[in-house]
Image 1: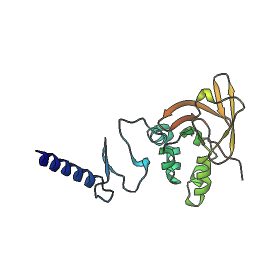
Image 2: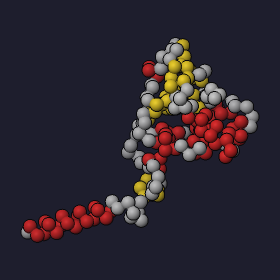
Image 3: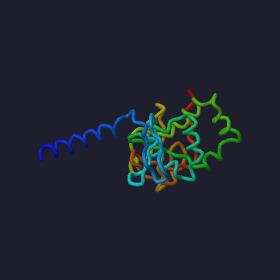
Length: 188
């Protein structure tokens, strides 16, 4: 009888070791839409219906943030918005991008302007989680670019460098504040 237990245990351990092999040809994750190849990718590629959504998943799932998502993908920083955080993102909606002077967005999306676009997008993120009641009038908030941005509170209205916060969504790795204007970092 002890031999049978040892044999079963040996088979189970062998199966687990083989199935966890990173060189295995089956590096995929099941999702609601089938499976997704995640070999060589970070957390940005993982999606499931059970976990709370991270900042990237919230942005991708929002029909009002398709322009922001296109910019994030153009500069290949999806992994930053999917990683553990904590991170506060001020996410301009599509209407905010439409306020930019004509041709600005098309110019920024050109490959030769990748670093400029990356700086603009990065200026929308602050290390740490700053929910509504943590944003105080006159506060200088440190942004991921190394610059500060000014918070203003008047009654229930909260603005960041003049961009009004329209709504807030909690994420598994921080918080997303939807804003009505694209933030432009100071010139360096």
